[in-house]
Length: 76
Image 1 (cartoon, one colour):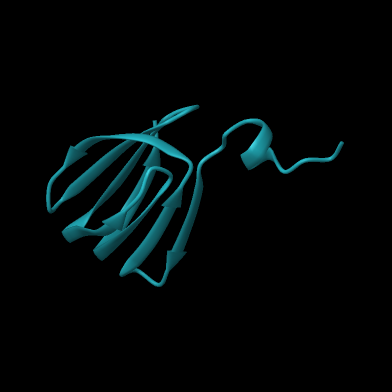
Image 2 (tube, one colour; image 1 turned 45 degrees about the vertical axis):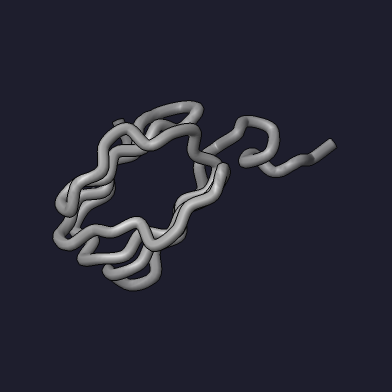
């Protein structure tokens, strides 16, 4: 079967709208949360979002919405 990689591997999906909004899907846990850095554990890596006035607008067990001034995204 040709299933999407996000289903078979549990890959993280990140959708960024402009530089002020991001949606993260398929994450495992939140590691660090400040107004300058949000660090998230995914199945395959850690995801770091750097910026200013970062805020988690909402989150569920598998997705979250981040707002603020997004300056950099790193996969570690």
